[in-house]
Structure formats: C-alpha cells, structure tokens
Length: 281
Image (cartoon, rainbow, N blue to C red; front, side):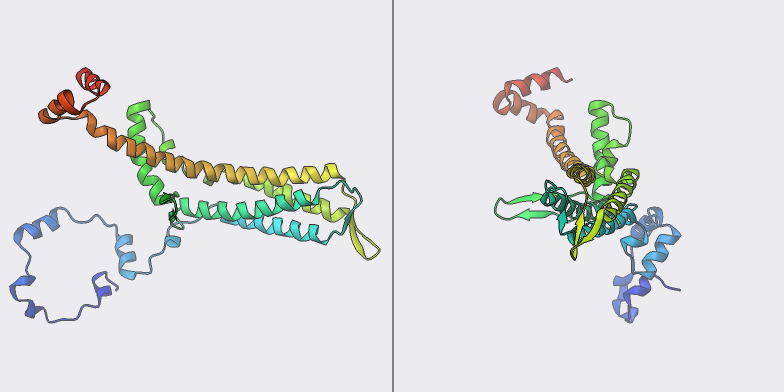
C-alpha cells in the first residue's frame, strides 16, 4: 500500500543519526495532541501523488463554451462562402467583426470560469513600464479573500450572505443564458444557410440588411453577456483586494496604547483623527 513517507524514497541507516533522531517528549505530545486533520481520502491522495486540480474540480460551463465556439466558427465559415448579398446595404464588415469579437470573448470567458471553478489557477499580469500588477481571481483566491471580506462588510454593512465570496465568480451562474444564446446562434446559422443559392458559380444570399442586423445584434448580445460577467468578476475581486487593504490599514488606527495616544494627540495626529479617537465610537 502506498504511503506519503514511501514517496520520499528514504534509504539510510537510522542508527547513524545517533540520539539526534529522537524527538523530545514535548514534541511527541504536541504531534499527538495537534495532529494535522487529514481525512482518509486525503492521506491516500497524498500517498499516491499525481495530484491535479482536475481530480477535484471541473468548469461547469466548459461544454457550453465549446459548443458556442464551435457554432460561431460554423457560422463564420458559412458567411465566408457568400460572395454577394442581394441587398447591397448589408454590412458584412460589422457582421464579421461581431463573430470575431465573440470568438475571442468565448476564449477569455472559458479561461476565467476555469480559474474561478478551481480547475486552473490565475496568474497576475505585470506591466513593467508602469510597474503595475493586475490581479485576476481564481477559486482559491476568491474564497480566501471572500471570507475576510464577509467579516468586514458584516461589520460595516450588516451583510449576512455569501455575496462577498461569490461576487468574483458570478460567471459560473449564467449557464441558462449561454444555452439560450447557443440556440439563437444555431438558428441564425440555419437562416443563413437557407438564404444561400448558386448564381453564376457564386454563392449569393437573399438576406436583407434588416435580417443581418438582427443576427449581428444576437452576436453582440452574446458577447456582452460573457464580457459583462467576466469583467464584473475581475473588478469585484480587485475591489475586494482594495477594500481589504484599506481595512488592514484602518484597523490598527482604532487600537492605540498610551504611547501611541500621546503621539497622536500631541504630535502626529490630524484634528479629525484626534476627534475620532476621543469619541471612541
């Protein structure tokens, strides 16, 4: 049977350690009194190794994202075969831009939802020129800062729900909206296919400008839903970091010893800070 210690491939004569191998009584008592709380399955996983996030987490929107991507690609391929539109006012450039933008957003959205579902981990982006770091949420980061955020907004705003934890992973909860958009795009593809006919060796379409504009709005709407939720999650997480940082800075300002009180009252405190300390509210 595999064991965690066995993974270390330890091979040495313990007697050569002499008395240095023995733990003190206090250390043994500590290990017995405060053991690491590992469940059987956790011990087994550690012993067996090959631990990957995909063993425990999945992106619930992975399939629908792949289906959306495939259908947008199919639609794009169909459009590319059309040489002429009977209605010369059809804005092909905007139609193609809408499909391209949606393709890109689906990729970004799937990456984000893989992060906040725990399947993958986010990485910070660094702008060396401006010396700025941009943070992105993932499951571990969101739940960790969310738990502290909950304590803060409970104290400041009496919040008694899990929005501080879930606020940077709202994208995981729009599966029904994505399914609806998938159905619409599939219908749009059928509409375009049915409009095509062969004219002098070219494929022409009898779609009107109005019909094409409606299709464009469908793609733009899908893009907006994905981008809005993804950007909300990113912004919520960054705002959470900012709020927690402010809490950490302000928290110590309300708990002063005698020396600190003297310094604030007589040397370093602003009038408003001195007033707030004196009020003690």
